[in-house]
Length: 229
Image (tube, one colour):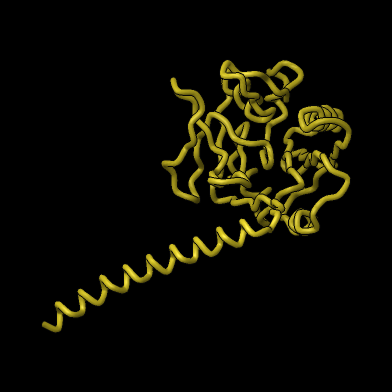
């Protein structure tokens, strides 16, 4: 791994499944990036895979680690944009692959975790937590956090906190700021079972759309009638 301006980049890919989507592979190959070392882990749960990748990046002498999940499609400028911010932790905007398909950008409040919605796409947004699907981390962060860096943990309400959200929580407690570059929009891949209910939902949405068009057209007709009269 060669150094460019003291940058030693590792790209870590946790492989939870034996096969990866070809669209992920294409986006990885097309990305603009400096020289890097490619690291993968494929033995264990997602928390164990992420911890394994960090240890391998440490052994490789990396000072920056970019985690990339395989169920994503990445923009060509993902690496260069995230590196340009020069902050300890910065991720791309990734939407959940189930309704309401909200971006994984969270803040803590007295009510618990809340979605961050008051931003414009293209902004660099400070968050309290984001997902681990596409996140660039300075390796110094791991020196200040206890091992394992990624782990599932039970919450007071009985739910389980994801390993990536827990990592962000620990990083914040250690004094690190976490950001999301919302100009880097990652496509979250999913599969969907199509059946009669899917068809019914489609037809219902189509019906609702036509009703909205009818209302809008009716309003426009009234405006035209008034202008004529």
